[in-house]
Image (spheres, rainbow, N blue to C red):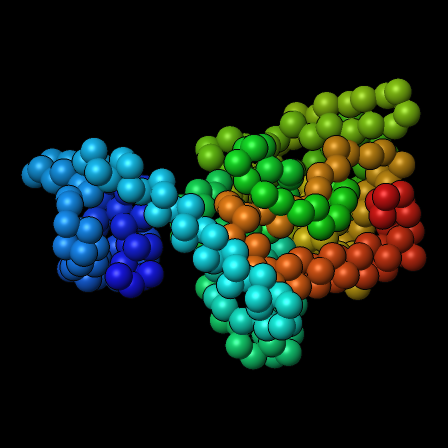
Length: 311
């Protein structure tokens, strides 16, 4: 009995569909179906009850699948432990990245990583939409915000302040805000996710708190596009300090209202299971921590963010 066939069995049980399992595993439906038949023939029982409308586990399948899953997990863990002891860095990195951070910072870092570790291959899923590890066929995701699902595993990469930014050209033409309330008269560059437009910006200074309802003539669900609009002088944007770090350091944009803080976030590397945390993934995690720290140190040196961000 082939391990690859057992992996197909687990995917069919997970998706309750041979076609969906085949799609997830990047194989033809006929190939997945043949794997199911081979396993059932070897066991001498049917693991699934098939009808024209649905597929469900048989009594034998309900008993076999959990034990099969545990056995494969143990084998995979043993394999990864061996690689870790031998310092073998290989495998397929199937990673999800947000659009702005992914394209402009992380992909060049991964290119460097792969140049050093030539046995690593990459499948990059770049978008800002909510992630479903199983639907999107990824093994790790670099995302802003800590995981809110107890079933996920994650490593915090760094703290990430959000900064209010605009180009010098925009400020020369429209004036520089001196107080959060001045923002109401400016053009906000707004971000949208899952049909929710984030147009209420919050600011803090000591015990003071301000919530400003922003108006603007540009809204996008792509963080990189909001970034481009900001650099090209189309308005004022509220951006992650990492996303816009290169333009801040090059003085293509200016940090506005630095005496007021906005709600910070965190950058996390998230995994759907322990077996996804391979030696390559661990090394990439360490690389991301070092790279982001270097950027934060540059921003601290320029006085753009406070050194407390490293805590």
